[in-house]
Length: 282
Image (cartoon, rainbow, N blue to C red; front, top):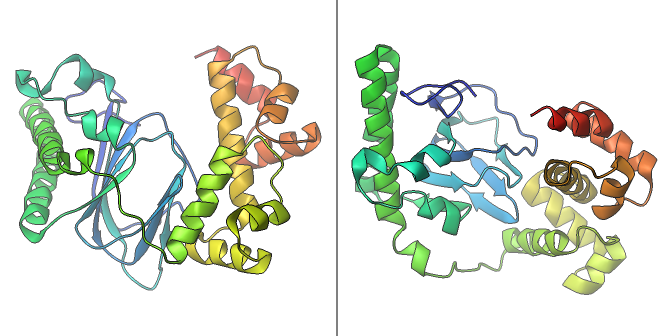
């Protein structure tokens, strides 16, 4: 992540109204993300949550949760994205004010903010200001971009005061069924997960369960399970540097070390042992 906006290199990265090709695989990262949806047809999956986006929706993402967009390629897909590390903002509140601007990210974790028209316009103006100051490129522009970013965080905090005190509503459509499947998988990831078990626990036929999950998420059910397990293994390697590859595989639900090793390399792009050793040098 390249630095911008007056923050140290790698701590803030911003792309305004991007309409380029999108990475549609599940991914995660150690920084927070603000995602603003301008235009298109997109369903966004974040962990066990599924959001069918409308223009003006803003997603607040706690980056380590697996997430991915599912985009309809027949429509333009326009979004603005900010990646940032939270520690500098915890250390010093924006412009000296004692406002807990990280609270929406840390309490709501992954949340869709659906903005009314006047609030959408305000958010778009702030994002446009950030882009203008970024393009200015000099010290004054970078400083003003930093202030505009802090203004955006204050805007988000204002909009999130009510949802931080309310429980989310649950719908009962196919998206909710897919979320129920994801929730169950997340709670039993290290255990044996079969279609028969999911059918019994969720009271759905195997064919309907698999078909609905693929329809809503765009990925096969067991592909999702494997990616969740691989991501959990990456977390284990980070938190427990001495854990063996075999033990990590067993801990996240793989019965056979060879299967774990093959899928890890296929998903991450390097062997599990090489990945584990690479963390030792961080």
